[in-house]
Length: 137
Image (cartoon, rainbow, N blue to C red; front, side, top):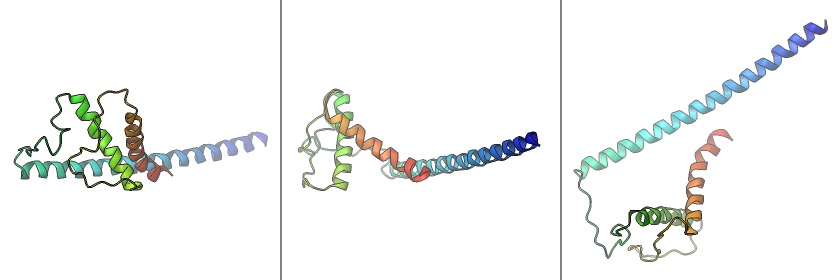
């Protein structure tokens, strides 16, 4: 009789583990499908934009956006990523809004050791955490 009770407990435990595992797989597949749909839509929008502009890059004068004309590619990439993080921060807390369209109010991020890279990493992690949190919690 003890053996029968242990077998029934084992089967109940293993079936509950299976249901938990199958629900996790369903959540992962829903998350993966959402990522695929979102990236497909973004790819379609980028392709349409490229076709509309006939693959010509817009000419931006250096006085309007000096970041795009900086000779060092690392500086351009780090500064543009920092601009994204600053704009994300202004979206949540618009305390220091400025009508500066020339990007002159943001200093260049010239190295990996700049402390503003931590702010950039935090901003990107926050953006990446949103779909994970909404899907799994």
